[in-house]
Length: 348
Image 1 (cartoon, rainbow, N blue to C red):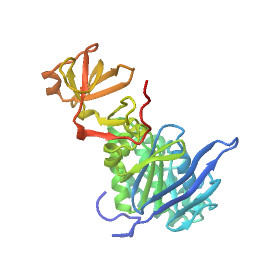
Image 2 (image 1 turned 120 degrees about the vertical axis):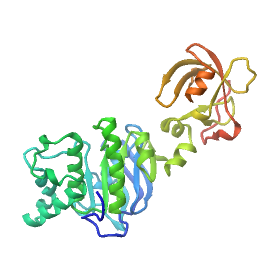
Image 3 (image 1 turned 30 degrees about the vertical axis):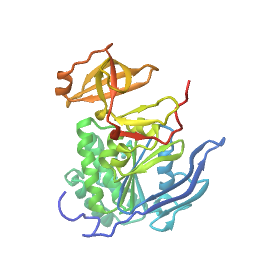
Image 4 (image 1 turned 90 degrees about the vertical axis):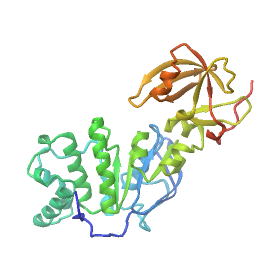
């Protein structure tokens, strides 16, 4: 799509400033899904809520959408407290993982459905639906049924349906998980482009570290209902605050010297030295070598069963081959170690 978005004027002011203020969500039985959450999201930004299953990221999205209500705390959207408002009056729109298209309705009527529920006349709602379909380049398919579309096309229709109400914030619940890797990359680029053109906030829940790093202006990594670390993708990946962040984001080895402070070293900055070479480091045993397409990932086990990984170029591996069962030393440069905030490793 080139030129001006049909849903927003040129140079539109960014919308979708979000604030969670001490938000807690308890479910029946006392289970705490979100625990005293404080989070600010700048207007017009792309934010990924990331973390393992059960960390609270989907509940956070549902609280913002109005599908759940907080036990305590406030949620503000563009300086308006939206707690207690129904979903249709919040200025948010949700794009679900399943797309949830009505199989008996045409593409055009699927996109226009929410406008129909608001009592908007047929001519006006169809005009707005056509504009939303043009945005996602699906207007030639307006008369088709969902079953006549590919998975990627259905997703574009779901996106158009979410955008047709001109929300200040678009909420995306695992929107790429059902797509094949090739299509996932294309749709990822399109989502980022739509977000820039519309100048609204996108809040995207994902399990995928790669997805978050590729899409987000701001990544929020959650654990047990709280924020473990947040920031721009580069900071979160290269400067993990805790061992959990280093391990979950991937790409790091976590070392635990006895009685010393934990620290992390990126896998591509960890070296493999021959056993007995005199190199200072950690003894390990090679457990596997995998070709990644751009190099090799060498899996290793420490003396205490720790899992390590080293990223090597083809040239480096061919110059100094390693094989499963080989004992080696893991080494690194001091400037590449990142101290972690976790408690010191226990002594013997």
